[in-house]
Image (cartoon, rainbow, N blue to C red; front, side, top):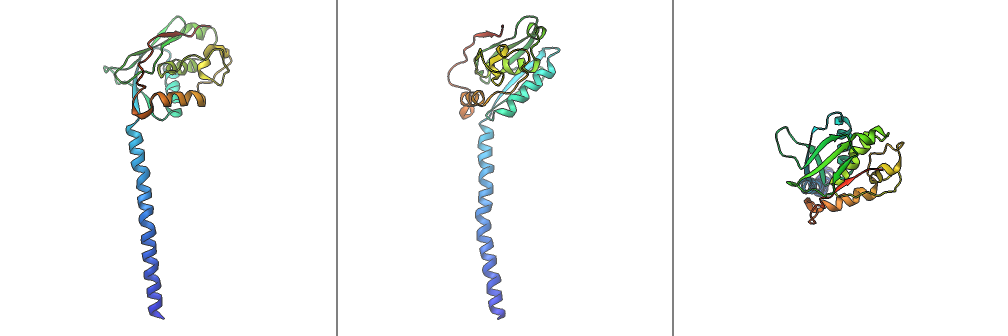
Amino acid sequence: MLHYIRLGIASTAVAVALTAAPAANALSAPDSAEAKNASAVVTIRYDDSRAAGWEAAIAAGVASWNSNVDNVKLVEAPPGTRAEIQIVATSGWPQATLGPVRPGGRAQVQLGQQAVTDGHDKTRIAAHELGHNLGLPDTKPGPCSQLMSGSSAGTSCKNAVPDAAEQARVERAYAGGAASRTPADGRMLVDAR
């Protein structure tokens, strides 16, 4: 009887070891997939040192994009380093370069005070203009649920989150770890009424 118990314990240990081995390999597989995905993330740097008064709105707009798309990340450029996106405060209407901007490329966002004076939300403005840099055109007129509907959604609209279609379009533009092979459009899109 003791012999059968030992055999049972030994076979259970072997079964556990054999079961655990694939599980360990399965656990390492996502890690390597995550590493591959992490290396496919395109980092775009921005400089907002000339956008006084917009810092909180820019940070919130950047956070909105960074939490809603996986393969491109916007990061603030350290002082004195080159940034792909230059963000400045102006007195006019907001406008931005139509991208998608690539690493090493150049784009601009002008955060216009006129839209704020007319009652538009600063965070929505910042997120919307960054959307242009990431390759999204305006979708005017459009509902508040579409970030790229911009001012056509009205002054009561505070939505600064890209909808699923906008997220997917940016994901496609930056698929494979690089910005779209199509060069950035380069036009300045003015977001006036």
